[in-house]
Length: 496
Ligand code: NAD
Image (cartoon, rainbow, N blue to C red):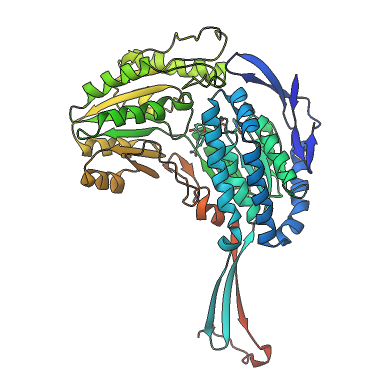
């Protein structure tokens, strides 16, 4: 059985711990690997190694660091299929989807390749007589990055390329459910010429996370995952004096206006609700039908669902693969049971679906609820599975109120032909990322990604200029030159 190890000081490292976890192929349900769980002592070795690497890496010119990232980008493109295969085998998503997540990660690497420009400082001449001032961005030191199972390559790449470009070193703690991609990324960074110790990976669970959150040499923590854990990570990291950001759970609404092109809405909803088996933080899990469009929308969704092809992610015919683990599948089934108990109409029930030949895989069919109400558990909670809830309201105002009153505020979309409705929605809906006739509005790498409300803790989004701001601190120097012109002793606050 393959052992998925840590990566410390430029090489794979088996660690000293005795705890391990299983990694499954969700399509077959068979165990495909074992992942080592780092104890605090292994985390300490990784952090210490990353701290030792800070002076030389941060002292390199931004151009030299960017050139490593240029080479990394080329290697990602070269090994796209190997990486995508690993993601599909451990996560279950289709190969096309896995390639898509790598491509979105590469876009952040491309953004980070522009870091010599992004790190340019500000200069002001003559802030006083004969006095100039300049501000430059300094790295923070060791950055810990803790990531979820659903994008094992893209989510780490939302963060580490920018952290590295800014002169920091990194310890990544990927999800223990699909850890294989993390080591391939580490290998490619080494091949690209990244000095040993600048990028490290520790595998594991809460033990490894806690060791990172409390380690005195960790300067900053970036977390992506569920809201309950993100809340804990943010509080613990900040209580230990670290800069922190935690991007968390979601319940994304797509509002369908009566004037929208229904065929376009249905194809958008199918991909956004059931793509990656709904295991996306930007998945649409609620469709809000406005002003009588509900009946037609639901009947078209039912026929689209009947055409959905569910099977192994390695099969190019599959639209949707299995869920990541048996436990997660059981949790999603529990939500569907609860929705039925609470009185929502289960129009399509995916609970008993099994693809031929893959009966032991963690598959669920697509499920569709209609007449969902705000007080129901299936509306309030993030299900993170192939379950779409339809709600019916009379007006755009009611639809906006639903989005804004929800605890989560990651993404929200509106489908309409009316520019006024789109503009009002975009201005008023309380969510961090808005789509107008775009169901999954994940911003491109030169904007930034982040939700509102319980979908985020901390002041910074990830990637884009917010990423640069998060991974740097500003130093401002005020200069009088030549020194011989210094004025005499002054006891009052200097003014120009
Ligand atoms: P998770 O919260 O279970 O795990 C995330 C990370 O935290 C993993 O590395 C895991 O090992 C670690 N962890 C788990 N339990 C912990 C504990 N008790 N103490 C400390 N660390 C712990 O999330 P997941 O199930 O891997 O991922 C799905 C969640 O991630 C969903 O809620 C999804 O919405 C969210 N997500 C959010 C975004 C975003 O940008 N907002 C992006 C992707 C995923």
